[in-house]
Length: 450
Image (tube, rainbow, N blue to C red; front, side):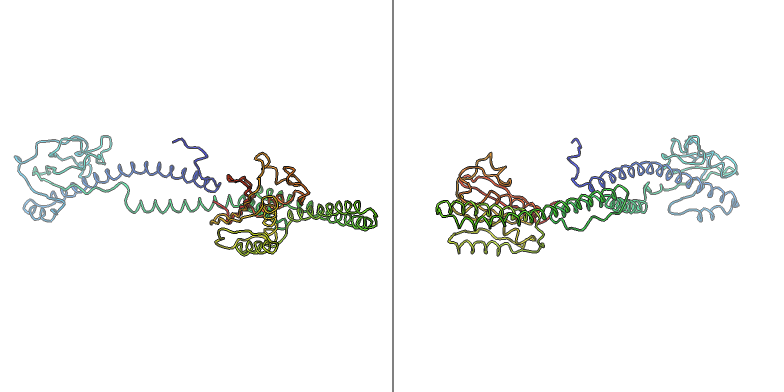
């Protein structure tokens, strides 16, 4: 299968760790392969040297002993792994071993000895008279002629196979790999930590402009990014504060002439004209109140706390019942949701009011999971044209004449609900139901998905 970036884990930490560990693992395998061949050669050479040393020691001991005492020396030299016997000339093996066995043995004894064997293969590595070839391991019997002409037969059991990599070495290699992996994971985590902190700070800034500034520490690039982020946060907060002060001033300045106009309208003698002027003034006041409420929703500084969503929805149902509206609730939230109570109440109330006003009733549904809480408000009205669904959450946008100001509102209900959902890291999803009516769903994340 062709490897691409899409097949790798999504997080930067996982990708960097995977790439580094793959490289280290490949380097470790190459080193292990090279070490395996080198150790196999060394082990084979050591076996050959050991065997030559045993033969030389045996020959040296027999030649140093008087002829009459050699049988006693044979008993001392013989063991389970090595059997030494004196033989006559007619018992000598016929083959002369090729290679450097004779030269190596002579080098240890000080002079060459005549030797015979039960094999004809090369017993020594050519070009190296001090080491046995790796193929000399099956050696069984070797006949050596002593200086006085006596032949001695030396039979040795083959040595047990010794692995090129001992268990101790394998354990040490595994420990080394574990240490390297731990160091890589720590190093990658420290490297990606500033990016993770920056992402968390950006997410927190979207929820609360008064969040603490990002700590400016670490490498130069990280400090520069933190400084730029903090400057951006300060500018955004300054702009929001200036806008809030301007809106408060405009609101105060508008309410004063509206109040004077309302008093003057009462002095108009024409009752029909007076009623028309009062209706216009009420519409203007409603527009001002709705606009201020919308802007307060964008800069909500309410504290975050656990909310019993079941109790919140039940309170909205009870409020609707007092006004003679019947609303049903299906499903239950499995656990409290951490959010802003007043903001969520405002968003849900707007959706319920829209469903009752335009959809001839509302029905609430709750779909809860460990990752997200969905609160759906269904109605049985005419719905919204598909091409208008993407725009109805824009401030002051009204999709059709059926939802005119004559029915109340200025086109900010869905905008407020959408912004409050975004304030909690979620979203407002609108869709027409197959059986008719509109479905408005507030999707609130419970935790960040991996």
